[in-house]
Structure formats: structure tokens, C-alpha cells
Length: 262
Ligand SMILES: O=C(O)CCC(=O)C(=O)O
Image (cartoon, rainbow, N blue to C red):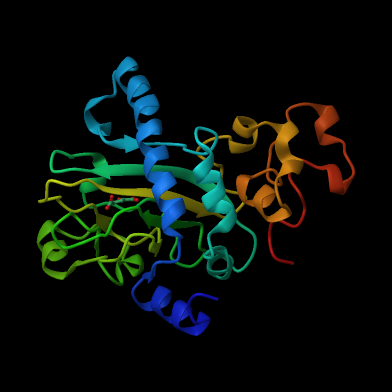
């Protein structure tokens, strides 16, 4: 384990966020940086084509299925044991986006926000992670986090946020994990270099995935993945669309019965 589990539990309870320091190999980080650039071209073309260019510049979405390094990240990251602790059981990937924070970036992620609309302080339904593909520093816009704000239902004022929020500073290859109820904001990049990240989010399996990852990767490719990856990608939490898909023995069901702890 890359962090003591008691410390993990305590920090998630008190602050709502933790940083796993430099847990991803530099070589994979480098491939994800290249992958991010490639995916940005693809996503940007569609953002522009569909008339939603303004608020989305320098953002990417649904990297799984677009470029292999991101699937590999999910396979090798050492943080999934902690995701399981957070949910007290199975979980699925809810979305997998990213951002290229530049001195010109002004996307929705720079606003004070949280990433789950149904405030659920008791039942954990969503968990954010952010993989730092560059060092996150005070100057290049390291994410601002309002510690403890996962316990408050209403949005903090700009004044409260600016007085109390702290930056998630970390080295490239580190992973920031936070309760999706925490109020946070992307920082302003005051340097000339980019500050890149990818942001896998996880949820309880009964929460609808933002993208149909099993279908995007192909049902026929399920068995190429490890059992854990099949679970994370969502192959065990699909929705049948025909009676033939519905009437199946438990081991062949599209939504498996073990998606909540017994
Ligand atoms: O890029 C950032 O620092 C902020 C990321 C963010 O807001 C998010 O992942 O929800």
C-alpha cells in the first residue's frame, strides 16, 4: 500500500482529500502527456464542430478508447485499493477527462465547483482523482481545495474560498484524490509552461456512467481485460436492452448481483 490506510481514512474524513506522492512511473506519465495532446485535437475538433468551443478550450473528455496509455494507467495505478476503501466495496469508472492548464485557460474547471450535483454527505457516490502530468506548483495553477467543505451543502462565497482554500501542490506522477463533495477550483497558471492533468472519476456501480465505456471499448473485448479492469470499466454494471439479455443466469447478467457489498 502506498499510504497507511488509517491516515488515508482520517484525511478523507477530515479534509476530504489526499495526495499520493509520485506513484506513477515517469515513462507512463510521458506517454499520457503525448496521448493528451493527441486526444485534445480529437476532442477540440468536435467541440468546435458542435458549437461548444468557448467554455471547453484546453479540456478533454472520455480518454478511454481514444488512446491506450489511459487504459494502461487504470490497470497499473496503485490507488484502486483506496477507491475501494472509500466506497466500502465495488466501484466503476464514471468519467475520464483531463485538462491542459495554460496561462490562457479559462474553462468551467476554474470556477469554484464540486463535481456531484446530488449532495450526499453520508452515502459516498462519487470520488474524484487527478493525475498530475506536470509538477503542480503555486505558480502554475495547482488546484485550490477547500478542506473540510465536503461537509457543507452550500457553495462557499468567493471570499471564504479565497481566504481558506489551499493548493494541492505535488510532483509530476502524483495523484490527488478527493471526495467529490469538496468545493474546489482550478488555479490560474501564471507561468509560460502548460500544467497538464487527467481526471478519472469513480462512482458506486449503480450510478450511471457519463460515457458507455464497455460499449466504447467493445463488448467483444471484455475478456482481454483483468477481472478488476472489467469491473472498473463497467462491464459488470451494464443495462440490458433486450429480453434475451435480461433473462440470463447470474454469472451472465449484464448487471452483476455483487455490485454492492453483501
Ligand atoms: O484542473 C484543475 O486544477 C481542476 C480540476 C477540476 O476541477 C476537476 O477535476 O473537477
